[in-house]
Length: 236
Image 1 (cartoon, one colour):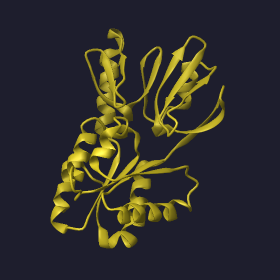
Image 2 (cartoon, rainbow, N blue to C red; image 1 turned 180 degrees about the vertical axis):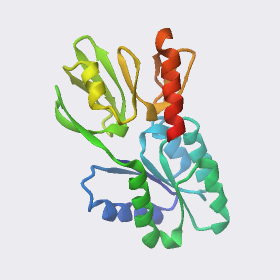
Image 3 (cartoon, rainbow, N blue to C red; image 1 turned 30 degrees about the horizontal axis):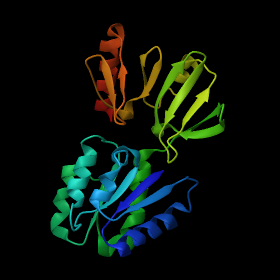
Image 4 (cartoon, rainbow, N blue to C red; image 1 turned 90 degrees about the vertical axis):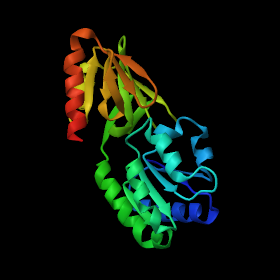
């Protein structure tokens, strides 16, 4: 799990980090927490817009505020859970602009953060699956698999984690598709099995992913692929 904390006050950055560490210590979840002191710093690396599972964002930062920062992230990525944090109650309605999962007052962090994380983990329904890759046996979070590509006799898993590594396995894509059934994957092409949670849109015979990649969809499969994606988006 990748978590970002963005706040221009060092005290609150470290407070949220400590509360998260205390909460997650009871779970068998590998996690990384990155701290950012401004919206500009958060957006400096383009991949930050898509790579985090959860972002705790202070609204009232001195230069670029948290709402503007979150809106830029939302413009390319819709699946990150955003938690807005502020000292001022009048900003509560701002959370609707960025589809925030929670709005937490800074003076209630100690009591509110655990309930917030309970809600997010329930929504995420974290699922893991095991594969014996050439790189070794690994457990992958299904939500973090962008797509699987068949390359001759191997399949390549394009995976989102702190290392941004790809994993390789000698296996047919049909077999992998069967193992990943029920996790929201769509066979858009004989060579591509794509996680629909990472598809922004499908148009012009192309699937546009939230990591910036574009994968082709054959004409003969296009209508069926698009209908299945639309049905998935409606279900979630």
